[in-house]
Image (cartoon, rainbow, N blue to C red; front, side, top):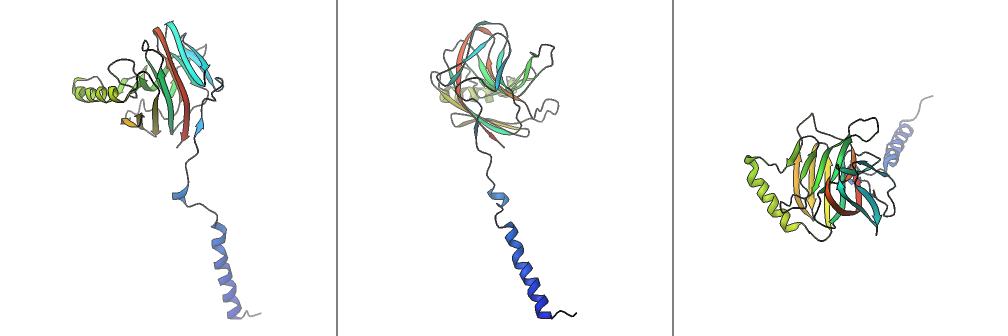
Length: 235
């Protein structure tokens, strides 16, 4: 049977008009919003975290994680059970006294050991208790040492400027807000809203793309500091 041209044309137009309706509720790529922030610390207990390393201690007090200890043999870390890749981590940090060094590990790993307590290594965002004021500097724990700033004679002026900025913006007796942002091999940090590190790790041997977070109680005679509002955005 021959179909009239007018009927055939009308059918095609009907199909063409109907097609866009299949995508009418799709969000354009440029409007897709990043995942909302999640809290890594529930403010009540250490669920989702566990201690590795030395004999430092951790407790929850007034909605904060408190790291503390005396005669601490080795660096101790309160680490997350989960690991993370690309993210933006924001937290608040405060020294209770300036007798010990600290930092936050990120994309960190542990060496294998029979007891499961192998050495922690990897990237660390510094918390400096000295007039050097390198808080939010980038350190490579148990591997390469300082990544930014560095202690070489060539970068002496850079280190001096980093110290100058740190002494201005770090709050020695109050809460500080620190942000770490990792996207592939690009690492950035901010301290109280001021950018501190903008580093691209081109060392393929040590360029770590995934690992856990760890709050550090540094080995030494005494330490006490606290963290709160540990917020994570996945990128």
